Amino acid sequence: MRELLREYERLILQLEETLREGRLSLQRMFYVLRPMMKSLKSLTLISRMLVGKKGLRAFLILEREWKAGEERRQILGYLLSRCAICIFDFINTWMMKGQIDDPGHEFFLDEKSDLKKEALNRDLNSSYWEQRYRIKPDVVPSFLHVHVDKILLAGKYVNVLRECKVHLEVKNVQTEVFAESFQFGLPESEYKLAKYVTSAFEFASTSLVNYIVRDLDLFGRLQSIKRYFLLDQGDFLSHFLEIAREELSKPASKTSTVKLSSLLELAIRTSSSKDSSYKDDLTCSLHSTTVVDQLLRIVNMTGQSHETGRNRNKDFCAFEAFSVDYRVSWPLSLIISRKAITKYQLLFRHLFHCKYVESTLCSSWTTQQVRKRICWASCGRQEPY
Image 1 (cartoon, one colour):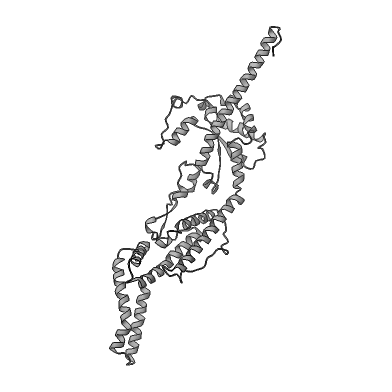
Image 2: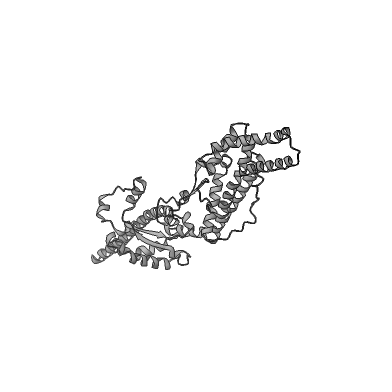
């Protein structure tokens, strides 16, 4: 609007100069001012509509009026095209730097700074990734509806890399500055916008995937989890059950976690997993509930478990409470979150319980066979086959 008013002021100065030169007639003045009078009338009506509005809420009003009819479409199109420059600056800062430059809270992205990434390692229901940065749907311009999800994700990806202090080489990204030439409602301008958003999104997603997979060895981490939680190479567990049987048979409340951790470390270092790069990230823990109660607590929407008498009295054995845990750092915690680790723990606790029962049965059978031989030998008779 200021630019249109400056054009009007320049026109008045030109008319004054023509008047001083004696070349301005009433008819000529009316001819020159008539188009501007129509524009100023439209600006007056538009200004009244925008009273008390700012940012994208004002933009949406202009957009609605532009769609409503042809009467003021030209000037509205001009205003929308000029306003879009600020929107593109905001989008570019977000998609290229992962930062929200919006001190007045006028744009379509919102940040909840109270959500911390550390919650991914401790909170089963952490909403950090979904809620830390989110879209405000009521202020998204219509020409961005098809692109807004890509814009949000691209900025999130770049934000993760920026927090990890990863240098991004953006010279190969389609960063053509089209804001100055953007014309609202023109298909060519919308095509350029789509091309830019797609290019920036692909660059951000590829950069993050390469960093997590190559630099942080995601597949190595997943293989490690498979080895320890799903017993892909379970020889360490067999050894652990042998050396920790006495401790595991005690009540959970009287069992030393420190001692179990030492025995687990010894079992791993004497197994086929001794050369694993991530064996030091494995720890053990004793849960305060059985695996059934843990499942019920997770399923229950209120977070209250359907506790049994065994759980209230805490008289279950250590092998029923035993589980392993896994330390994961940012940004791998986005993928291997506390929620994912908990699912693996539930599977491990079930498998561990089965292995413990199997080991106990084998031990009982072996003991029974030894006693049987002793009994036959004491009677002076040969053991039948």
